[in-house]
Image 1 (cartoon, rainbow, N blue to C red):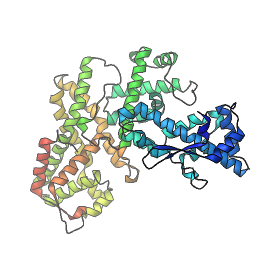
Image 2: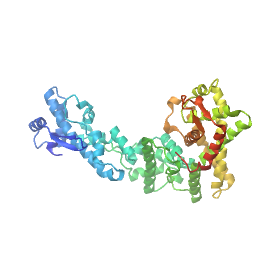
Image 3: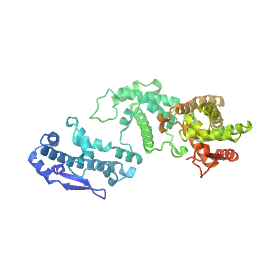
Image 4: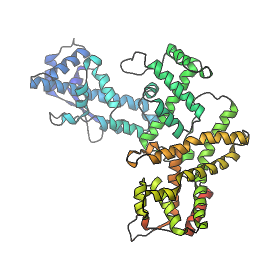
Length: 472
């Protein structure tokens, strides 16, 4: 970095470009304090010390020189990011500079609000250069991180992602988002645990997470079961693939788009490990695709059957209306049982529990789903074997739904919802839009919504006829 970078401040203009502004007082101070023979590290260490001097004039001048230098490093970091990722992720230098190039050179009131202030406040010369420290702050800036996530980019290496992911988090991601089978989950968790054990013992390189060495890969391999053992190259490939799944999940989470689009369009990745046999691979692939297309239909089947039971038992319109509105309040509006009871005019939440009979409803959905999945999977395995596998595979799907609804509303997080919870909300929301007539002259509370009984059953059947292809 040339000496003039210590007295030339790069500022953002109205067009989003970095424009240099020479700071004469900083130049005079710098030329008096340093000679051409001083190297970069010596200059920075000396400037940091002077910025903390009791001499306020010297401290302000040293600080201004450092601010000028940081502005050049911010620009340099942004240029490298654009050169490396801009074409692929469709962003330009003018898109990212406003997030981080925010120092206009004013002294001293505006400075604490800038990124340069945060960098200098935490900078420790003994732990690295100011340029490296600045690069790290730029890449980790919250607004920059959010912008990159919107473009589909996360600035973390595969190894940093793996280090930052716990086995519990990985299990949830692979089970709920990618729908991996239990054997695949077990192998992935074992691989992550072995990686964490070996990698945690290795010395870090200036805080960076570097790829595991051949020696480390062999040690990881020794910690895996004999059936999962592999060559270093294959093991490295598996770790990269695992990191890719984590990266894709984090991008979707930060974009707020996990399961937000068509679930049928959700990328179902290749299994984490090499397939045990081609039949198993084909079965798991077909199972995942069939689950996505058949779950909505199974939900509609179960809701339709419950509505018809109300009609056969002569419970009449109020019970069927309350049943569906209570479900909508629970899954779509995140209401508590007590709030639902008040809105529906019931005496207590135990009446809501009795009305919904959620365990029975889940069992009915599960039975309908198994019946729908069997014909699509029967060409691959005997029917009796398929029934056993489906019972095992679907157990976690329904357990997650029960666990989520048992969690107090204030502690629920959107990313904790399983596939069944999400699809229940979707089906109920679609049904409500199709079958309810809202009284525009009254407040739109659940108790003030009229349900047309004949429309409700018809709407559910119509939804059933196209539920495998229509998604939010």
